[in-house]
Amino acid sequence: MKLSDFNIGQMYIRYYPDPILRQSAAPIEEIDSEVIALIDRMTDLMLEANGIGLAAIQLGVPLQAVTLSLTGKREDVEVFINPVLDGFEGLSEVEEGCLSLPGVRGVVRRPAICTVTSLDLEGNLFVTDMVELGATAIQHEVDHLQGKLFIDRLSTISRLACRKALKQLEQQYQQD
Ligand code: ZN
Image (cartoon, rainbow, N blue to C red):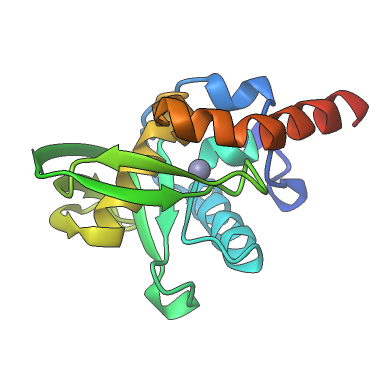
């Protein structure tokens, strides 16, 4: 996969059930100007859509890049290249949504704490502990890198509650 094959400025957020969302993302081997342009585009689209997290696969690019902004502000944007999670502890239940699933929300149970090991945009390795909303958000985004969506993790009751909204997205996708 070559990032130069993509028109980064034309990228938009892909919606469920676009099959690209089920692909696994590959590690980024070199943080070049195209990767930086991709991160810029992800940041713009995430903030425009009032999201707190976005994975590159949501723009149709199967590479391991994630942006987060837990406040929704540009100055708080964090970039994770090739993130790996471990150190899971505790459990929390948080109502999640996803920019690729507009109108769908549901409670997901995940570890309350995790540690992320990642590269930053300069290619430096960093390790950071994530708690509360940060832990939920990074786990949600790292799921995207493996082709997983939060709807895969819903309880039976939440899944039933989301059924209509999912059907609507499926019909919308057929029409587009
Ligand atoms: Zn998402």
